[in-house]
Image (cartoon, rainbow, N blue to C red; front, side, top):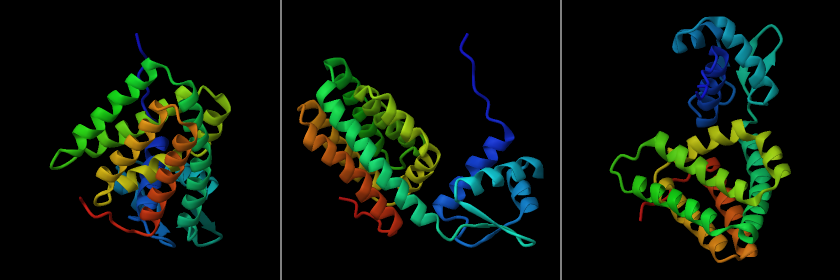
Length: 221
């Protein structure tokens, strides 16, 4: 029987607060009151305290002695740095995928693109389904690359990456543009063109980061 992972209250608090910070719902420099956060999430202050300690370590929260916890004023700078790391590593993964992909690998990627395409056609896209499809595509490219070090290094920024991609998918036009960019990555991998595959992946990540951090909605075409 497959074990089902049930997140702890601390993990729920970490993800909820992290997503709120990265999305901008909790603003730069805003005070983070433990009791208020606990009431909003319907939990005690103990997991909130633990979550804030973790978020301080991740650079999203700062603690000011005798004043409390605040959203870091350097969140966007941190996210920009994470995007640069992702672009380099995922670009390398796409290059390797273009060199190593089997017919079965390409069929899997193509199937994931088909799911994404269907979701982009919905009048009100399912945000969770889109996020999961986006995640599956990137994870599959990494798996095809068959490079454990790339996977290991990307794991160190995975939490911030997930929160950032959720923020991106909330922007107008980003869903359709993201699908087009993923299609370009797939086509380069299928054509076994490592140079273009790497370029397309890097461009996708950095241009998405630019649009999100500059808060530029993409025109819907």
